[in-house]
Length: 291
Image 1 (cartoon, one colour):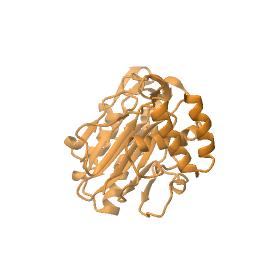
Image 2 (cartoon, rainbow, N blue to C red):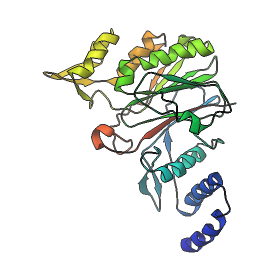
Image 3 (cartoon, rainbow, N blue to C red):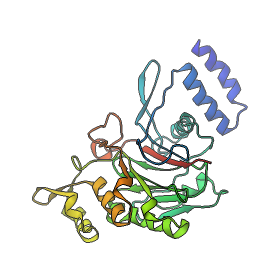
Image 4 (tube, rainbow, N blue to C red):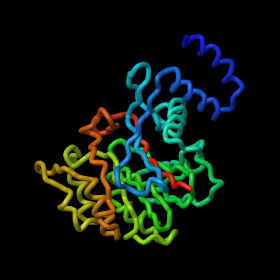
């Protein structure tokens, strides 16, 4: 039966444009291949009627529950990543044809998405590690595989942001800088900002050396609260606690900070982990303002 439908589909998709072809492909997977894609969200974060947020799990199921890697980073497999991105959008009931990423470079630049005419291809050429927007129905996202994905949301000003807070970005106080730019561009008060820290490598698993710790000593008065000595010259670094401290110092209230509570290395069956696997896929952490 499936082979019969596959032959008919080849004829149909020949006349479709690229987006319709991908959409049809994902629909076929769901109906005929038992395709099931699930995402993770953090209870209590934001207002679900005004903000959609999600973290993609590392795999989806099809063919009677057989897991398959969800490939969302274009460097891994460009063709599959486009198909899987469309499947992710459809699983979240997002009408947009595209997800807005930036070109992540482990820096501290924040990109402001304020032009509704800008395409996702254009934003993906912007070298930055955070993005903020006031635009509705524009899913913004970052890619991670151990680095801390941060989602920021101001319900008063109705603006949102996503941050790729890796070790280098965290060393440069990227979360605090993003909150500062939310204030400068959109008039957000830090006390109104909600923050979600997604799945990332925890202090239980992230071992680093002395040169990695020195910038934290310099830029974080609270550094001893998230750095633990392991052996001479070796430390366990908790990037989640570091970014929480960065946000609190910037004015975010502790009660407005939410955690997924999942270490990507400990829970490698659910999340991608570069530290544990080496070359691997990426988790998409996505936020979208609703009309």
